[in-house]
Image (cartoon, rainbow, N blue to C red):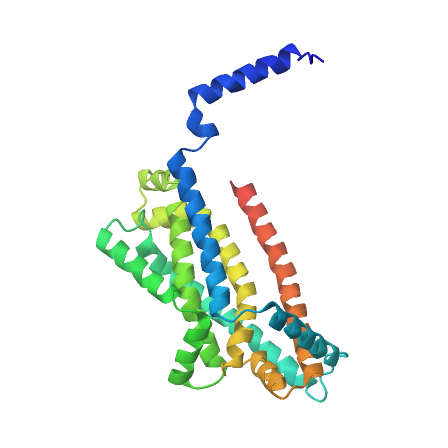
Length: 290
């Protein structure tokens, strides 16, 4: 049976065949690239299998663990704070304060340092390179590690938690802020300078209005994330609700653990909703200004 192709389809197939002849690399990767892809996939698979074996992964152990997890979940019902409700509320307030003060302090300290790390602000390569590597070093240490360090420096409590969040976010904000500043349009700066303004005026009125919505959006996102981080560092003694969570888990008080988890989830969800609305408002304001 003969299948008749429409002229349009036949022409499309002819054009496609011509493109394959003229640009074979686009439609079929070279043999070397395909072999490299296969080698990487094989190596990744072998590495995954080896690490699972090396760490003693067992499907039976995993299934047994799920059974124990189910037992714990049953013990959590119903959630009950007991006589610790107001202590939990105060601790949650501490966690929010740790996240807020740590995020705010990191943003304020990172802004001037990010200017040193931005190529379009500081042309000196040595200063730029040193600033970037300094921020990379700070950012390379996890918040939990900073919490352990600051606990040994200033002692247990929320102050160590604030310093841990501040230090960790300082490196991250420095990198993000500097990249936002480098991506700013140069034309407003040139306009300010051509009108008689100094380089400082060019940054203040040409760069800062462009990047400020981006910086505020990043700060809000990190505040939301730091609420969770502040909970974790509280477990090691940096204050907040994490300390109560660790104590309840150690004592197998599962109804209290469930109540604390629900408090944390509700708080994070509320902050996520509010910060999302604020970020949308900031983006809308930026669009109207542009």
